[in-house]
Image (cartoon, rainbow, N blue to C red; front, side):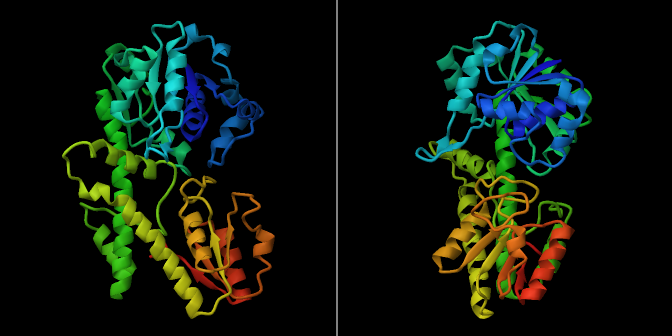
Length: 400
């Protein structure tokens, strides 16, 4: 098929590259002309494991095109357009910002192709779509929805091996065309209505941080009780109704999706009489975990008379360079406010705000070195050497 991808962030770029590798012709459009130029030159805007391999594969790359103007696309020959633009949280209103999505829908609505399948991959509250469509003069019944479930750090793997494929829409012909695009995938395809398709995404992104928050609260409880955290979490996770997956403590959780989606789910029911105490307190639980981790680090520094802290891992999780809503940055800020000398190291990110490895290796006084999430064995060995040579203390807040 001929596919257009609007937006070259994590979702759009990974989705488009994956579809191109499956013999589809894919045109990417992004209004950032510098980004388009870089992609045309095989320079990626972010780090994602294995993604670069598809840019070096000649056959896949030749099936991709990169443009910065809607007029550069021959729309009459296109089968499906995926709208993958960001829907960030508006800090002033504490609700989703739909301006990028509205702009993209408006542009696509103006093209001459009545058979074009317009598919929303962006995460958007169900009640916002009708508002946007009414504003741009598009019948919302003509839209299809295909929420993504890609995880940064494993996005390429997740694209090719999805747990499920969700398609929402009321136009059967367009839904079937979108379904046909995924015929090579082994995952079950769930066909549902537009509202349900978006709720599947939102509630998935609410349950996962809820689960992470439970593990973190359990960690605080077990630590305070003097229990063995490894044994407790293993024993709880062995219950088949619970399971061991996504059951690891962490300094806190973050990223570009979980925080904003949990906030938006809270916005769903606030105007109603629903009482959802679990969901309404997920963010607060995570904030408490951030503060608890900060205090743990500060206490260790004081007890062992260390000269400061080095936080290893600046991004919000491993195998990505995404700093959005990073717990490391929040913890660093809190420690600094407590008078702690804090430095950050991340092997994937070069920044004047972070220390480089050669400076890291020159540390000659005792520090607390905190691993904010799992790292590769090579780096771990280097850090162990630094710890031994500088008489530092290694703290692993996520380790069982």
